[in-house]
Image 1 (cartoon, rainbow, N blue to C red):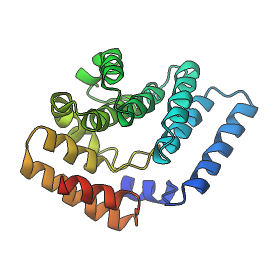
Image 2: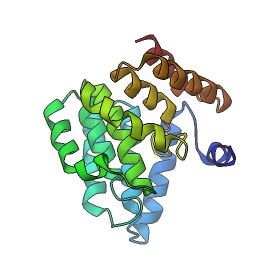
Image 3: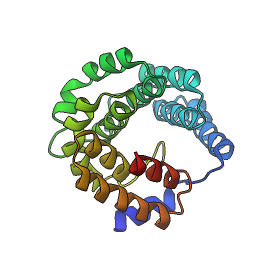
Image 4: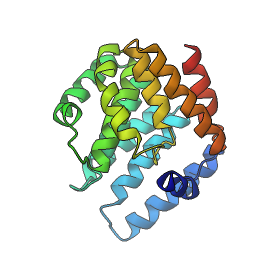
Length: 208
């Protein structure tokens, strides 16, 4: 609960995507000005905002830049996450399969105490698999999403509620009661966070 509240205080949850894009660009410019390797995370964040705005070409380009400049760290894999999601929302199933194969070792075994990059890879992979119609892949990731959801209630890059992704993956596995439980939790979190971007998403996927 303490972790969730601290995330709520820190995150720029907003429906104003123009303002969010401006904030993330400032983040990138500051890191880039001092040639910090962490500009790669800013590039991944820019890719996530581009997806929210529906600009998939920009998202793919920024994700590629993030991957190319990403240092080895606890956040390794974040650029990959948004390249995969951009391809999924673009209905490029073959590209999604190829990207999943690249990260197979992480997705199969994120580890007992996974890094943030590995946690994000599992959540974003499950999200992308449902969007791309890869139901078996999404179903196989469901138990892993449940495990990491306790530590990551909300994705700090694209503001997606992890419980929504768990619900989507549970539905892909035809675990209907589990799916309803996750969507119910996501609805409560969306109300608690006043998360107006996620609330309609949760309702839409619950309806499906």
